[in-house]
Image (tube, rainbow, N blue to C red; front, top):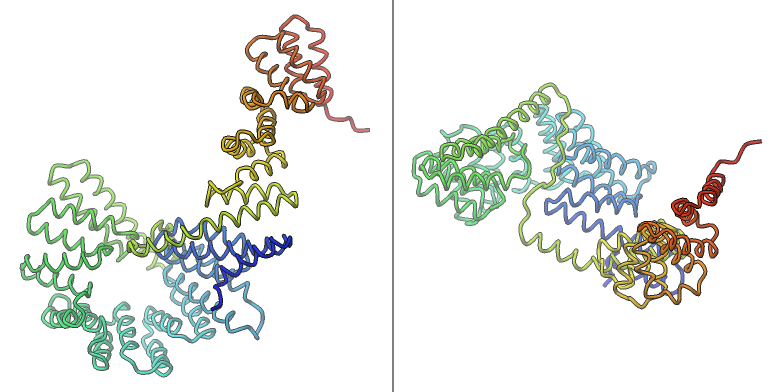
Length: 579
């Protein structure tokens, strides 16, 4: 069995590195990491955590900027989170990357179709259905699959062009067959577009072809309610019960039955139905909203408050169902005030007012055909525990391989003396596995070699703590601390290796210089002068030691020599005169 691409890239990277082909090894490590980050980002997006997916997508794009599939997945996740400008930009970029003329591959055509689909969805979301039709037509031209054609049909319905929509649906039937599933989707499109009569017709056709099709009876009952409101309860209720007789765990039928039971004040049956709905679909805030209404009618204020709080907690998108969460905050606020918690109640009322204003502005923008750009959602939906666990499991498995890959990229960059890039890779490796063997040592050495002493001290300190007998690491850390003028810590680091340091002129200079700086800081200027003179004899280029020596000499009354040293420093720092 052929290995998946992600594993192929990792194995290839390891193989090339073992044979010394570092260039190809680096390329394969980047491809592996891009695939892994892509998979992790998709996973985060799929469980509703868009905010956590963004940096993963962005880092993947840095490693594989030409991956149009990655851009399209990122674009889709951005659309789901209402990050519409980002979704639009990524889809456009994917299209630009795939424009190779008329003889494009089937894969490129499919990717273009996906990009046009996302663009059409963005236009629909921003109240621009005519522009959406153009994009959906392009999607169908690239790939006439059901999803693209269906989107085009729904866009026509939003323009009240029922004739064009019917023509598109007829083509779907011609291509896919006259099936119950197809009629179910047509009914849903008509129902959501405000054509309940046509929806009823389509759902009846679906049932005629397959009376046990999931959601068919439920959808017909819902269409009856959309067509005639509460007066259709006698027609709708039998359909919901037929649905449950075939599919007992249908989470959508129970709330409808609960609503019907509430209308006839059968609170016991309504409570059973609504609790059953909440158990089957705990991420649906509508179930808790209806429970809140029920408990309010039953004068069970505490239970109503609990249910409404759950409705708010499970609402990832405030604009859902035309900002229906606004009503939840309002009702919760009233109940809290009535129960004596006035401050909390007023807070909920203010939230309700803000959401009402936001809803009004959104509706006005749509009426005036102005695109609306909502802030991206941090969380697009509440994920099922099993999905979260699967995502964590993959991340747990991938993290060590990703850390090792970043670390190896850091080593490859360090060999090429690109220390800034190496530091970046080591930093990323630490994000995935801070305890990776030799990571801190290699990281600190790269930063030291690149003279980025501030970035060297952290990893070198951790490396020395793990390996206190490593003289090379100790020397690098002491030098880094000295160069950062952290003389007290430099002395502490030097202390266990003073004898070895005295044998190396540069280290000996810094050791004496650190002592001199500490003596001067403590006011012991004579000892400072002795140490700093020794440091400068070993390294005359140490301007910091010369400056402190000058100040200590002046403090001891030896102003002439001190001023002379300061003048030398000033002359060395003065810009050269132009001829």
